[in-house]
Image (cartoon, rainbow, N blue to C red; front, side, top):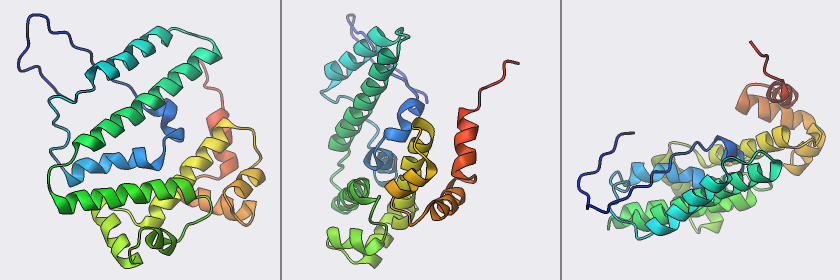
Length: 219
């Protein structure tokens, strides 16, 4: 990413926030992940000269700076929650400012974001296109075409991504058995869950857990 300051006053101060989402990736909602497609619908939406929220966002950076050196488990959780809150706030601001007056683009984006929110709420039990199309008062065919044009994925693929993300979180961040996880995600049995997970990720749930928990050798 490249950026430059084109003009500044004598009392100008700049706060730049860069962070990796790795530590919160597994708990981010589908609506946040879906925001990356906004730029495809509205390529100019990232060019924002003034948001009106600069002071608010600066406070997040100050709080993160306070907690960056904490080594106990509470400090680590504080950082994670602050990053999560910051990410949602930035997405909220970005969404407010992304309208360019193109009604068709705005309608597509709004429908897509509504779908992502519905997926967040229902993916553990509802995986068919018709359910989401009915909730949005659209035909399954039209919803499928709209989602494909926005994200390049099908509705079912988006649902599967949400299931996989949740599965990864439960496998790596809890000690729940694979059978319990398959029940939580509404699979008929652990075998069906294992087949689904391996198809999405490339390895079985057991091997994925073992791989993630395996200590790194000191070379």
